[in-house]
Image (cartoon, rainbow, N blue to C red; front, side):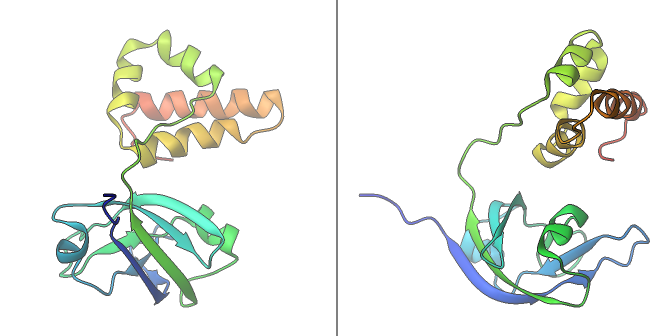
Length: 160
């Protein structure tokens, strides 16, 4: 017998994280511990039936759970803080792997300390770095982005 994966569906307003970093989130309207289990459950969110995002439900010191809504996701949705969106959230039970661009893999292989730091980053952070390089179309743009990422990793920065 196949076990049903926990899932919720609701309408949410995009809220301002009010941290000076153009960050946004949505408030989760259910008891997350009851529906998904305790901790920071990994989830797959589908916004407006079109844009998918994998992340974790977190509290960040608030009494409620939230899901961060990255700027690139808001851009794909053509939505800004204060707008409503349809949200479907499913517990994410799939392994989280990141397709690391060849250039980044080669650079990390030649810098073991940076590779170790990169590998300990969360799925979302590793994916953000990999996507930043991988989405560049021109070789010179990829090279410039690779250099920026390597510097940031060397500085211990977890994200762009």
